[in-house]
Every structure is written in C-alpha cells, then in structure tokens.
Amino acid sequence: MCPPAAGPLEDYAAGFDKLFSRLAQRRGFREYLTGLLAPRDRNKTLTGLAGSEPVEGAQHAAVQRLQYFLSQSTWDADEVNRRRLELLVNDPATAPHARGVIAIDDSGDRKDGTATAHVGRQWLGRYGKTDNGIVTVTTVWADERVYYPLHAEPYTPASRLPGKKADPEFRTKLQIAADLVSQALSAGVTCRAVVADSFYGDHDALRGELSQSGLGFVMSLKPSRGTWQYGADAYTPKDAARAVPWGGPDDPGGWSPVVRRFRDGHTETWWAVDAQLGWWGPDGHTRLVIATTDPSVLPDNATWYLATNLARPDGPHDTPDALHEPANLTEVVRLYGIRHWIEQSYKQVKDELGWADFQVRSATAIRRHQTLVHCAFSFCWNTWFGPPSTNDNSASSPEPSNDDSGERGPRNRPAG
Image (cartoon, rainbow, N blue to C red; front, top):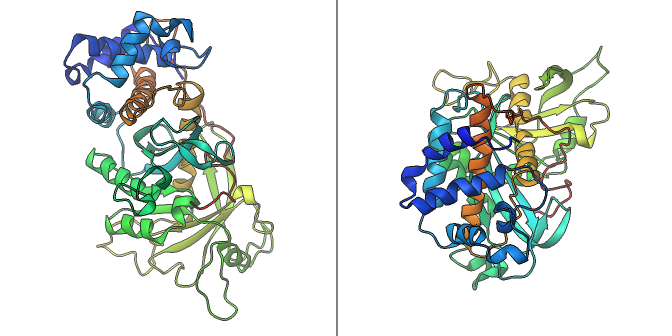
C-alpha cells in the first residue's frame, strides 16, 4: 500500500468535508487516515495512529482526540462510505463496469473477552480453527486491473443474542451478504456477475435470491456437495468431473482448453467442461462448470467446481430477451478467477492498514474504524491513478498474492 503524501491526502479528505459538521471532526478524519497509511512499524491502535506510546501515551491529547472522534463524535459511517463509493464510481479510472464482478466473502480475526460487540466463539478461517473473535462479511468490486471494498458488516453470533437464532436481531452471513449486494447496486455498482467461494455458493437460497434480483452469479461448490440423482448418475461435482472422458491434451474428450491471463502478463492453460449433475447441465438454468489444471487428477488446490446462471452460448437459454449475455467456458473461468482479488484486499487491509488492530468495544466504533480503513484503501487507488506526484513517497501498485488458500481457510471448515 502507499505511504501518505500530504498534498494528495488533503485533496482526498476535502471530498468528505461536508459530512463532518465540525472542524475537529474534519481534523480527526485526516489524522486517522494519516495514521492508517503510515508505514507499519507496530499495531495501528489509537496510540499507534497518534504516534504515542502504547500504554503511557493513552492519555495523550492526540490519542484522546482520536478516541473521541471514533467513539463519541457525531458523524455517520454509512454516509462516509456512501461518499467514498460515489468518488470511486464517478472516477473513470475506478468506475465499475459490466465486465467486472462483485465478490462476497467474510473475514475473521481474534479478539479477547466478550465485552467487544460481535465477538464470540466462531470459525476464524485466517487461523483455521474455532476461536474467540469477530467475523465481518464484505463485498469487493474487482476486474483484472483494480479492486476495492464496497461494504462491510460484522456478523453477530447467535450466542450473543437473548433469543439465539430465533432472536429477531439475528441474521445469517448469507442474509448479510445478500443485503450487501443490494447496497452495492443501490450505490451504482454494476457487474457481470456476483462471485463467491463454496461457503456462499453451496446455498441454493442465496443463489436463488441473486437470480431473482436479475444478477448473474459464478459461485464455487464443495467437491463433495451432494445432490439428488438416479441410478448410476454422478451425485457430487467431483463425480461429475470424473464422468467426463479425458485422454490427455491430445485427446481431451469432453474437456476444452481455456487460457487464464494474469496481471503480471503470464498465462496458464486450464481445462474446463460443462458437466451434468442432476438437473444442472449445459442446457439448464444452472450450469455446472468444472475447471482444472489436470482433468486426470483433479488436484484440490487447482480445480474449481462452479455453479453459474450465465447461459451457454447457443444453448436454449441464450435468447434475445435473456437478462444476461451468454458466457462460454473461458468467460466463466475468467469471472471466478477475479474473485481471488478479495483475498489480496484482505491481506492489504490487515497487514498494512490495521483492519483488526482496533481496541474499541462498541459496534459504532468498530464500524467507523472499518469504514476509515476502506477510505485509506481507496485513497491509495486515488493516488495511483492521479496525476504524477513530485513527492518521493509515490504510491506503489498493489500486486496479487500467489496464495489462493482463502481468508476462511481450508475447505473442510465448518459450514456454520
């Protein structure tokens, strides 16, 4: 990520001034972003953001100002996020378009005790186990060139609510995800498809809700996801893949080569197929597309089992009045491949911008911190695409990670 340059940061922050009714709030916004964007030499707690000592400096005036700004000052985090997205949507360099995706995911971090809002024992994929922590559902817009967070909402475990899962305040991650996608559309975000890993893709209700909203989707499935079958038909996506003939690259049977192009310019040849799984198939309303580097082995870390409602070209659902343009195998693989940028964004907001470093307890303060981190993230794109700077602290282009293991960890994580 980029270090803060005084001139560009002041210009960026000025775009939010109307949302802060007091000079102290506008100053707090600038100071908070400056602290988040500074090179990370320690955790970005309030004392760290203010450049004070971790314990002794807690009562320093600068720390107390940021504490008040984050927890008690009267400003609306949703309005700040709305303005952030307005700037991104209206900037030609970052404007969403019809070839990009909205990616859904969630991110977990350890937090001690029970006094902090949203914290409970739950699956934290970053650590590969159930632990005490906070999980936030997020959406990101991305194409092959640029990616940025859209909305975020912490998930409240049922254990924190009086009525548990029957409590009227309880919302599943799937319900939160659907609402965040709706918010993205309301903010003027367009996309070719909504993409997500198997935690979200395995749920018929979410895919159905996206279809009813007129959205295309490309979502991963677990290889062992069961479905109704008859007789000797395949009953899991992996069984469906094994049923497709493969005699090697010179005799690919039912598999077709697809070329994946990466940001650094290199390409890889994968193999893909429209498989049959129950009522899912090349001519169904939902297609099962399988993509892999090796159809003979179907390696776990390089095989995707994808459900999509984008029609096969020249298939029965490729009609003039169809809601979506048809998608061939290369297009389906391209769309899901963009999803991995959400994993890269997590690495940057956590490793550089202090996403999980907050030491506040209220739900309001947590949401504000997350919103400010997203503002800092977006400022980096603003600087990267802005006019050349004479400041030595120029922005560096973010690079994708080679680690596709995912924020929520291994595939055998619990379903809850």
